[in-house]
Length: 305
Ligand SMILES: [Mg+2]
Image (cartoon, rainbow, N blue to C red):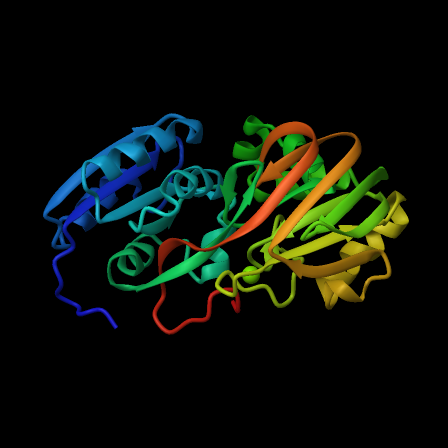
């Protein structure tokens, strides 16, 4: 339990300029005036790609607490830069998709989220790492990567979350790709699959509860492949996910792993936390236990919300 009146030292804000939340950055500055901040470092970026440089700068300047203003993309870029540093991160969920915050019980309410960032519980949470880059929510290829890539920035901003769903519907054809998935260097799946997902938390993209028992503090990544093909089978997978346990679907195979390697017969676009990254024929993934310290609501179980 943290003492309420502790000094908070140096606080860095890394804000995505185009994301609005509550009364905006003006309100954030006003609210920060009520906290016992010794030194305030303020960084704004026009896109999340520019965030890691600022995160590294914040570390160099001695930040004790880094506040990330943005959605899953901003959080992913910042935690990738801050992983293993020991610095504490507070999330101000200002994005279109705030799945990491949502999974941790951090509300889309500026004063409440800021209160948690300062006075919540500091918890060491796991991250996943794929092809050298950390993620907090999920990573994968197939259905998901295609739908996010299609939701271009303009569409995402105009339509918000609905864009994910809408573009997702256009991709339910679920093309099958030959892939081999190894866990700890032993073949776990070999065959045709439409989608490979790695999850650090349970709720991924479009509010779909993909992994029922996922916890971001158990040292394991959730892993699933779907072998569904065509709209009818996909509708069955998504239907099961929305009404019950996802692992009951006959087209989904799931397990837990610490180290995963996947190879694809044809190059696949992969995705980290909602952002399309590159097109590859191999993914090397592993869990990074306790890789990042995040302020979460007190006495809540991460991943259980
Ligand atoms: Mg886990």
